[in-house]
Image 1 (cartoon, rainbow, N blue to C red):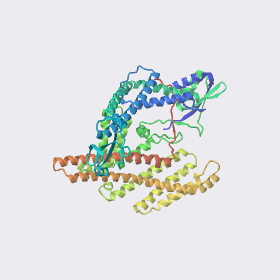
Image 2: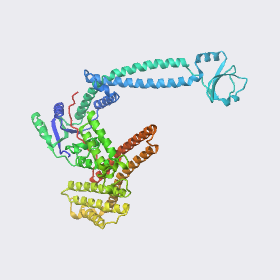
Image 3: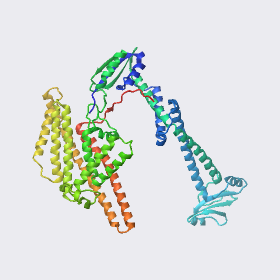
Image 4: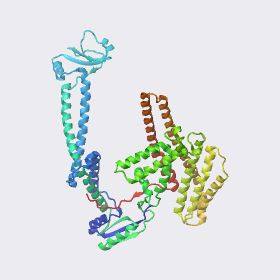
Length: 599
């Protein structure tokens, strides 16, 4: 659920500013809201240093982070970070220079080892040496009177030098400039720069050992930034200063007690409607399971919106199972989850439980549809055969229309739940009744979609549902508490706009057919790879190895594609279709209380 917040205003003498911030930071329950702009030179400098240290930490290999000695202060950490990034830039430039030199060295190989200075000295003495490269057939363009010395060549191209005392010699070929440096000099430069590169890389490795010092400095500077932003954001009037923020209702008493001890003036009140109230989510053991997915997406509901973790978990599990669509793949996920939970202790318990749940739902769906690695014969085994629901059996033609019908049913249930939930949130306002009309429209569209896409008979009940929706819109959609008649007229005026939104509901419900389409694609890909392996056969050792490799490769690709589809389509149905009907904008501010950071 979303925790109720209170707006907190603390008024103090300006000379108490540091004391109040230290005290509030130690309590650590107030999310500060700046009263004045918070940018100044100190803050800009701190942000620049933090950005530099974050960049430094990001390039340090993980193995160095665990074994770093802790005997450094914050300033040391910043200096180490700056030195490390300096070495990174030097290493980058050295590698680029060595790369250019290696390319030049490779280009000069066709000319062999020579000193370009000798060519220049010969030129001063009146002897010109010009370098050319051309196709063998183009040699006939050169006069036979010229002194041509072929240096090297391959099947099609030859490289040669023309020696002459004439300056205005006309040779109809593209001339190659005499290089500034020879191969010996370039190789010497490469060797010198490589030694320098190794030295810089060693210095980088030495600084990797200071990673803990950099991280501690990062904590220190982040705390300093929070402090400076809080201080700059306080309002000031003559000798009086004040700060504002938001605090969970359950923690207001601790703020009030502290204010009494310190002699602060404090005002604790309900937030105004337009206040930027942060969102603090308090999860039950059930809803906490889905939080890793929400953290991955990186969205937060607004303070006055809804905590959807519980309902998302239910429907996401169903979407996951239908998109992956194969009980065999679910078994693979189950085994992988067990191994991860057993050997990777840093994975949170919520993630492990979530994947156990997703694996189980996928196995159940695979069992009722008879999908086990796309092999029909597996579904006929004694135990597995008993799990199959004949109307959903994947290897029969009529199952496709039944699964499509099921997709629409799931969509209608989820979207109508969103509307009912929104209606409950609006109670006791009359506009809550308009949300019941939208829920009725969803079910009316459900029957219409079955008529349009599945050629079923259109139920007369659909017209009553649509009529109920129209009536609820006219009567209650425009009610604003300023008179029933005015609200009635608003409802009538807004009816055309609502009709367009109603067409959007049709699109939302049809969108759930993606569950069937992606599941079908997963099945067909699995069957295709099985057939490829079957065509090769399992008679000889060589063919068995090739067939097994095809099966492993094909099903691995299929699982990865299914996982990507879950991220795109499974999450989309919750975050877009469902959330739109619940009017969630996902523009919430995450509750981040001001705390004094200790390194």
